[in-house]
Amino acid sequence: MRMNVLLVVAALLANATPAYQQSGPRVIEVTAERFTFSPSEITVRTGEEVEFRVRSEDTAHGFRIAGTAVNGVVPKRGKGVLTVATTFDRPGRYTIECTRMCGAGHDFMRGIVVVRDATERGR
Ligand code: CUA
Image 1 (cartoon, rainbow, N blue to C red):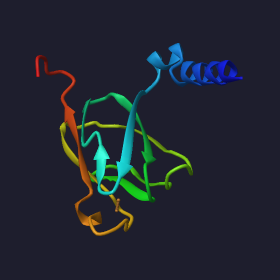
Image 2 (tube, rainbow, N blue to C red; image 1 turned 180 degrees about the vertical axis):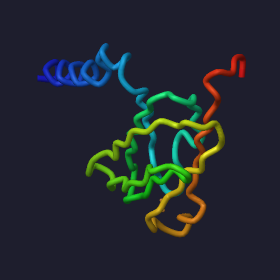
Image 3 (cartoon, rainbow, N blue to C red; image 1 turned 135 degrees about the vertical axis):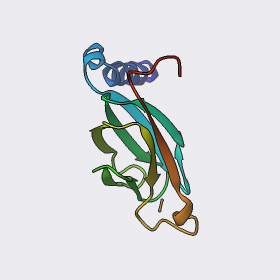
Image 4 (tube, rainbow, N blue to C red; image 1 turned 90 degrees about the vertical axis):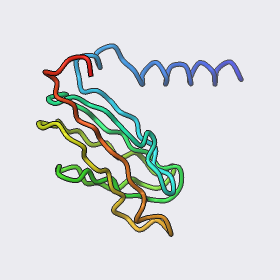
């Protein structure tokens, strides 16, 4: 019985990273937990298609990237994953903000997306 469970887990893990994903968006897994996003700093390149998959470890949170159309709700733990795709056209620093009241540290629940110019090298 234990062996069967392990096989199922292995199959799920294999499905999580199919080979064809290499030609699709870059998937970035993010965890939201009072009162941080992990990773708290995410670096991408201009023109890169990215897909954020945001999961909560506790209550519901918001996931908004200032200056972009990204603005969603991260369901509370065990209730699903917020999946949102975007592409950054301009380099810069974009603040990730929690937009749902989640407790005393809500106003400070922030992260950052650092967008680098894809044409620059060695940075
Ligand atoms: Cu997390 Cu507000």
